[in-house]
Length: 200
Image (tube, rainbow, N blue to C red; front, side, top):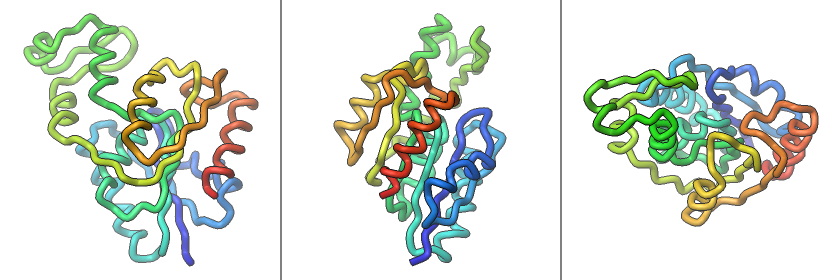
């Protein structure tokens, strides 16, 4: 059986990150998907293009996605033939995250609707078009999914993860002293161990 993993990076990441995960997935080919724009209606075309190329060549397709890459993956591939997904610090509810960021920036929906875009002090630009797109394109995710969540995640709340788990075919692993970006030696070792088990 020919098996492949598609890797979708998070914001500021790179498709080259797939290389560091190859050691955990020796039975699979690994393909990192590159994108430089973070608008879902643009990224979806890049993800779909790679999926379309591999689906005829492989018998089994897995998915690994990091942070916002998980949202892009679910949005684009929800109706595709994905055998299993592994999500690292995933953005699981984009509308909730946008509303959280609006709250952090003290921006109301009325403000955002009237101005269209509002830059924030924490480096994100809030977008009315983006919020509307998320609301108009709900996700139905039926893929068996493994989630690695960090107890000290400052972007995604434990409540959001728990709500997702209660409604999906999902297994959760938590590194209580981890952070949204797994980067220390200890965190990366935990991630590698989790991935080897999750790949099954």
